[in-house]
Image 1 (spheres, rainbow, N blue to C red):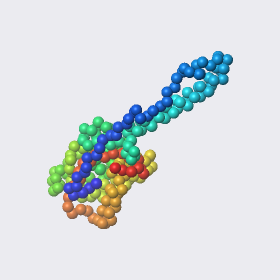
Image 2 (cartoon, helix red, strand yellow):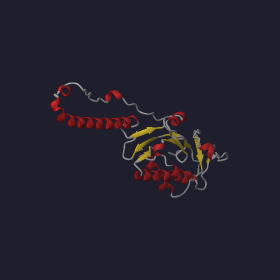
Image 3 (cartoon, rainbow, N blue to C red):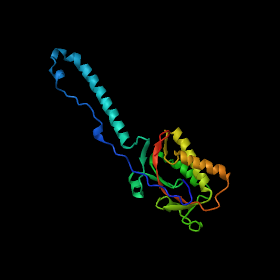
Image 4 (tube, helix red, strand yellow):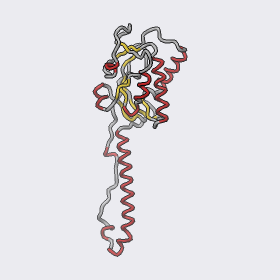
Amino acid sequence: MFSHHEKQKSPEGLPLWDAEADDMPEYSTGGPVASEKSSRAPYHKPWLAILMIFIATITANASYDAFRTIVAKPNGMRVHCGATVEEAQDRGCVYDVMANAWTPRECYFPTLAQDFLALPNSTWFYDESHEQQISMEVLREGNILTLYPHSTHHDRHCLYTWRKLSLAAEMGGLVDTEAGSVPHTKHCTDYMAKMGGQTFEKPIETSRKFIGCMRLGSTML
């Protein structure tokens, strides 16, 4: 979110999953089945095979759910980029220039981002007076804490987040936690309604963020 000298709070990291909490029943090849007379074996073997297939199916589903639990939180956040550039890179996140945020790859839309970056006046600066422009190559590294974008960028940033919401709804429901934030959407709508197409008179300042990936409809932190 854009603000004048407003700093972001550091998010927490990936959740942990307790493998011991997933209790599966144990099955033995001994016991009554092994002691059955051979004359009854043809009757029991088909049912035993069906039982084993059923158990294997449950086990596979449990393994998949366990994998999802490792990367999911109860509130719907699937992955998060941590609190440092090193953590973000280790977790496979990418730096989204339009959001000024390290973002999980699962909810990053590179084509959409490039479309917005190709618009005129897509420029960022080191300073409030816009005298020291940052090259796109350096910008994409995501190492700069505070940026001063062109005055038209705030409008584009809001439009960009809304486009991401539409794509997320169409392509599976995963979106970054900023675009999926109700307060952020309210901020954008209030700002655009108030400004009426005008731009900020004062320089815009935006601080780098580390965000997560969530499913549409889930509750955010």
